[in-house]
Image 1: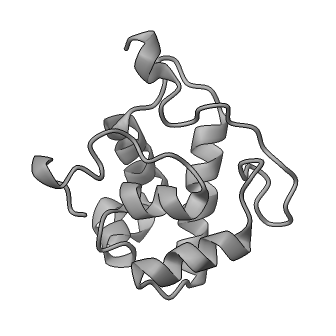
Image 2: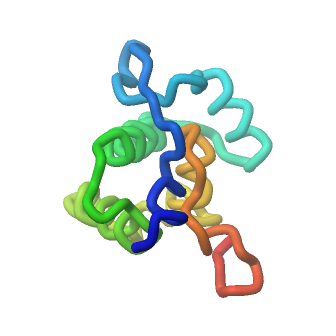
Length: 122
């Protein structure tokens, strides 16, 4: 992975102490996530918040090489394997767990997850 894509998922990522969301980006709030969910047509449940926490935690830890869409997809699939993996996540986020999940988590969605011309679910 080259340097131009290395910081794409978490450019300037810093965390802040928010109760229940220890790995939240510095400029993120639960209220902002609820507003985004409303514009996305989602009613947030505890299951959605678990995915938000997982995304924030995964992206808060530096990875070598840096996370791309496939790495993040695989990490989520593994994290939620017991619930049904990626199929379960698509039930929660019909437009894509990476695209919608990252928006709710205050993270930049990986390249290709929102490109309507490249087979995206968005």
